[in-house]
Image 1 (cartoon, rainbow, N blue to C red):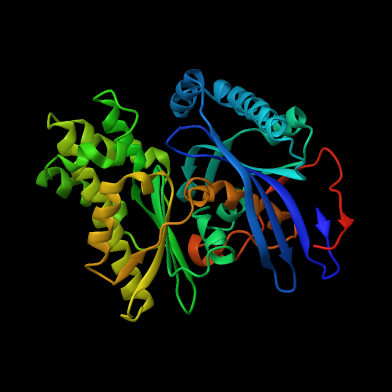
Image 2: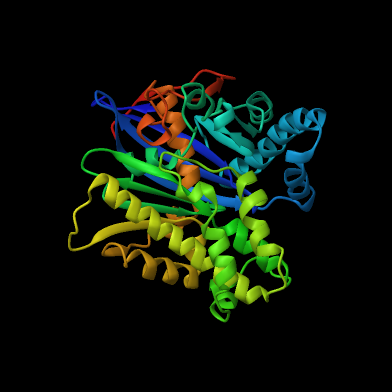
Length: 385
C-alpha cells in the first residue's frame, strides 16, 4: 500500500475469481487508488491478468462437490485453498509481482440465501499459508446474515469504477444486470447464460459455440422457449439472485431432455437469454420510472460478449424496450471485471467501507464483508503519486 500527500492510498491487489462456467481461475493484479470521506476510487488499473484453466481432475471435483459427502466438502475446501495458492505462486513468480494482499471470492458450491446460507470453497488460511500473503475472502456471508441475497456483488464495481454507464450487463455462467438510476442503484441476476450454451455445445464435441456460429444456423423451438420463460424465478421482483444449482436443476434440463438438434436448442437458449434480459430492462424502466431519452449506454462484460450471435440477439430484444447502445470495453475488462471487483471488495474491507449494498441485495442495511487472514502486516510508505 502506498500513501501520498493527499492521503490517497494505492493498493496492489491480486483479485481471484472462479465462475460457474468452470473455465478456470481468473487472477488479476490490480492497482486501486482510493480516498476517503467520502470513499471514492481515484484511479484503477488491471496491470496483468490471466485465466488459468482448471485441470480435468479439478473440473470433475467441482462439478461433483454439491452432491458429495460432508467429509469431502470439508476436505475440498482446504485442498482447493492450497491449489489456488499454488496457481497464485506461479502467477506472481511469472510476472515478478509484489502484491499487498489477495482478495479471493472462492468457488461457489451452494447459494441458498432464502435458507440463510451461501458457501464458497477455498479456505482463506490455506491460501494465506500457501502464498505467504494476507488473504481476504468470504464476501457474501454477512449480507445474508443481515437478510440479504448475498448477491449481486457486481454493483459495487459498477458504482465506483463504471459509473459512466446507465446499464452494466455481465454475461457469465449467469447473466446479471445493474442500472444506475438517478435515485438508487438497482441490480439482480436474470437467468442462466454461458452454463447453458457451453453445456449444449459439448453435445457436439465443442467446448463452446464459437461466436454463436452454431446457434445462428438453428431455429427457435417455441415449446422450449415457452417452457424456459415460464420458470417461476423469472417473474419474481428484484432484489433476487441465482445459484448454479437453479441453472442445473431447473433451466438446463429444459434444453437437455429433448431430441431437437443442438443448433436449434442453442438458438432457443440465446433467445431465452435475450428475452429475459429485455424483460429485466422493462421491469427496471417501469419500477424506477426511467425516462425515454436519446440513448442509454450499456457496458457488457463476461465471456458471453464474445458470442456475437448472442450479443446481436440481446441488442435486438433490449432495443424493443429502450434505446440502448452497447459499448464494448477493453478485452481486460470483458474478461477480468469480476476479478477486479473482488480486488475492490478487498480494499473496501480493509478501509471498513460497506462493500455490499442493501438496495440491491435486500438486506436490512449495507454491510462490510470479508474475513481477513493476515499472515504479515500491511506495509505503507509515503511517496508522491
